[in-house]
Image 1 (tube, helix red, strand yellow):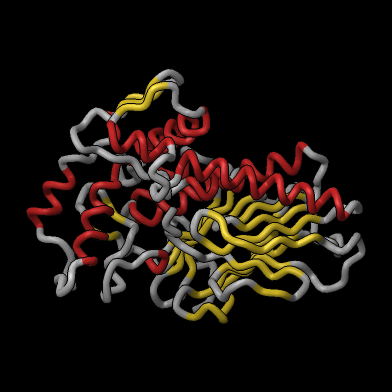
Image 2: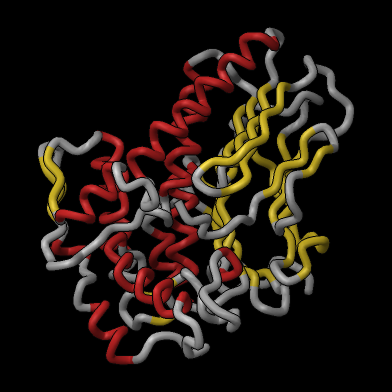
Length: 343
């Protein structure tokens, strides 16, 4: 699964993965048992899990279960596994007896498409495929596909034509295709968090491309996230407290065009507006906190695409979510355009 944006890095016991503009960190002085930390890859991106639990053997066995669950969910959502449920749906346009996870996440995606008036659209895959194929050709125009090619791809896009229920998913349009890369990382993150919580883990930090925190760090303090300037990852713009305590948000997602660029022009990237066929470049990045990583993930993607005038009405539909918008100069504003950061 393409990593749409790798904007989360986790610092655990002073070990940092990557150098991206969101950092979730453990403080230095533990008062609980030393955390068990796993680092690997998930859905095509660097990933990590930090578990604070007195039984290290049990924690390690749970990490193995979580990794197996991630692999199972990739077999549902991956565009790069030809035998995945999503790949089979895209190849035939219909899928009988779909996995429950596919039904759930596609249903959520369609509701977000409706709320955003099509700015977020899981049927955008033909447009993304067009850009990938264009830039894979030697000597391809740096301006991207032609207007006529974009128009043809857009004829295959339309979330309103998708039919989904527990018995069957049908795409509706000829040569249509689905991508859930705008929400799948958050969904898998939530599933792992739910598995750990149900297994007795109350203090957890997860980074599977989106961040999710339970409880507190090993120092007894809330998990912290530092959101940085997209163009200057070492420069912190603001900090957030993550966790499940009152007044905290469990999940954080950040979207920006830096995640997947198609060619040499940084303005041509994966955050496509299906209605125009072109990349959206309203912001340098958008960060969203929410009770669930699925929602944070979907909203950060959607808010990156909708025009600025639409962000307040969209967020009104999701009152438990909060958003921060970073412009190309590193200025931070809220949904109403109020300044909440320093340049």
